[in-house]
Length: 306
Image (tube, rainbow, N blue to C red; front, side):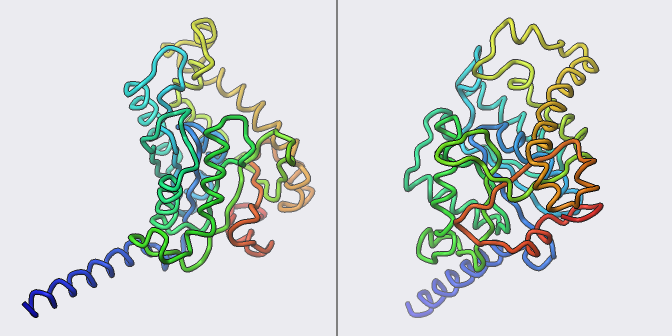
């Protein structure tokens, strides 16, 4: 009986050590670990795809997580068929960017800031052993976006608390939590604490986003037969890419212009003046508060460094 008990205890201890080791794997390889949360299987790709590609180029580990499965994000199809399609699209974008992806099985349009979902987000951050966590602000246009922001905020402290989700070891160092950009002004507008020049990976980002056909060419939830017909068909891949490229030149170009002052801060006036395309991030007041010196280490990109 004693031997049986002793063996059981030993097995539990060994299992716990294995979980611990799994949670901290990658901690000593000198590589950053970044997890980006979006509400749907396109949001993290749109808002952080260029920066993710830059991290990946240097061997850092990036994971894009969609908190819902996107199963009503189309004007013509829905349900499991759409969820599978969008999960596959997201996986292909991640492959082209050189990162990982995960789509959670929560219905699109039904995300709530529940305790269960807080636990899920906490576990994901811990399991990834994140140095940086990126999410929507909790004032974005879509309820799923807003609740992703709330859930990630609520996890920002709990990821370090040992007896919250004790099945996954707590992080020893709180990550830096960042918001992705948006246009909303109330209760306060987005503040670009960090702006990243993505010119060198802009074409890669466009090539990756080509995989999001249900959204980029078919219009997603607000599309129509007319809007789908307005995009070049799949039988014309060069025209199709040019059509998407034009839209993203405008979108990322606007972001570079809007956050030019942040680009100047991090790249210097001469280099920043040449930047055509950018992604921007705001430091959340929850989580670790990085110094400028730490931000430079967290965004260690080529050329004149951040």
